Each structure stands twice: as structure tokens, then as C-alpha cells.
Image (cartoon, rainbow, N blue to C red; front, side):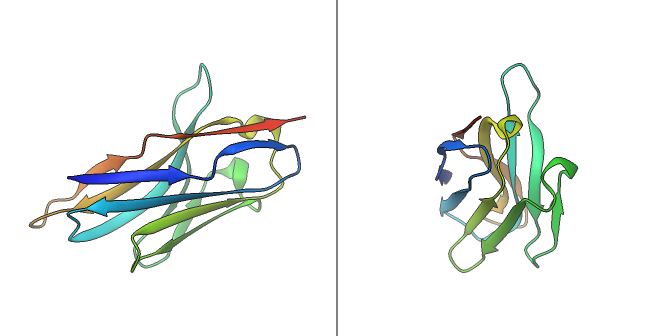
Length: 120
């Protein structure tokens, strides 16, 4: 069984910073892409940032220049450094990873979500 556990959410004032962390545990042979998504009330879940095993990154236009995604392949972790936070960044943030436990098949796993609230 594979589990993703997020941490680091909370309440912050606009212009502030937060760092989210996600750790994968369980039976893990290999992790491919990892990423962060978010879902605000009444909205669909959207991609915030993604990173390949090799370190290539992709960001939503709304967070470019403010957020930075990074990963540690040895520790099976992915982080999201969020700077210059805006009220519209308020959402539940989810970690996602493509993980192979056995064999060559990769499956998507999601964390339970962590709330980020940015106040004005």
C-alpha cells in the first residue's frame, strides 16, 4: 500500500509565504511525475505545479514566479515553496504522484489534502 502525506498548510496573510511538503511511503519501486494540485470551493481541481523525476518543472500561469516545486528522489518527497501569496491562492492543496509498487505499472496516488488560507 502506498500513502502520500502532506504537511505545511495553514493561515497566512497576503504577501506571506508557506512551504508544503509531501512524503510518499509504503511499497515503492519507482516514482515518476510528482505534482501539486489545488481546489477552491466551487471550483475544479487544478494543476499548480509538476516535476518529473529528472527535475523538469511545469507551473500554472497564475503561480509562475511565485511558487517553486522541488523533489528529493532519495526521500520520496516533493515540496512546494509558495511566496507572495494572494487571497486567490486559498484552496485545499493536494499532492499527487505516479508510483510503481511492483512491476512496470504506474498508478496515480493522491494525498489527503492540506488547507491553505490567505487572508487580506
